[in-house]
Length: 417
Image (cartoon, rainbow, N blue to C red; front, side, top):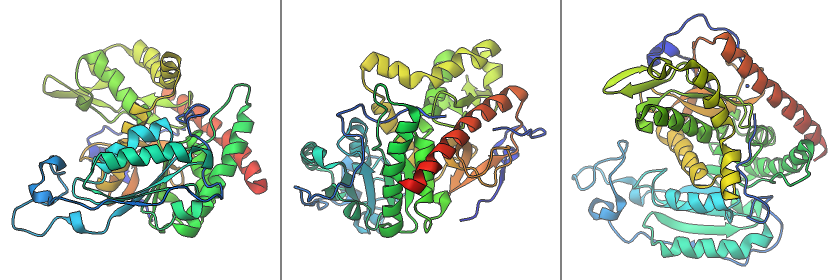
């Protein structure tokens, strides 16, 4: 899949001389005992698939809600909507965990793939979590969702990865007390090598893969390297939660809604070295679109507390809840996958961890690094031509250095995994 270059000027962003710039990893994974970890232990599942048949016609069904802009009108006498077409087959790993619990309902009711798109949900987790997963399946059944054709709970990779359209890899090994980072990387290399190989063997070659489990960037890179028959561009990792956090902080500061803020950027790793950049962001204030720096008029806050707040937000949630982010992580996953499926709005870009090959910002190749991208026809493109100042370049290089070190450690383990 080729990537055509989109220039910053096409998005209404001032472009100056582009200086080289470069990019870290914070855990979305559930805490110990909440279902995060390797899925695919070879033991028979105690659960069988559960069939769900649609019971209403979408044109007349008020429960489906408003149609998406990309959907055909209902009841208009035109072509029938794709409600009775082929279902999209979606895998969620770590499916008994807290993030998945917040995620599955949104997917199943049509928030991600459209209100007329039937779905098959495949739920993968480790064998000890299958009883918990049975409860999740019962709840999905009890929601009586018309789009949900089938739910397949399993602990087998050969079942979970078969003929997938989308794979959302939430489960990973969480970092435990006293665990060194290299030990965490080693454990996750084993998981994502196995899942990448399963994608390569069983999934459609057009599958879109989103990695959430941490360290998300490097886990995504390992999965991609373990699935050589699937294009590297089909793999992405979640930095949309950081992106949404940055939008929210700007909106709160200015007393506007998050929808009034656009084109913030998360550069680099999903960790505390990530760089939330608002140099190119715009905000609608009283009907007028202005730059964020111009609107806030507080450079010290934007270069200090704002960045630290976004970088450390996950840790702050854990400190308060005693659990990692779940509701906000699930919302970010929905945003990320929906943009892959339907594209980004005109004039806007989003942050996404993607393969760095061919970028013009000086980020080393063969890293899974968060960039500003636009998406059309399920294909992402770098937003190129954004001017990078010295402050930004230093931050981008710092997070790239961390990702390079993670990659080198992970690749050492990959050969022996």
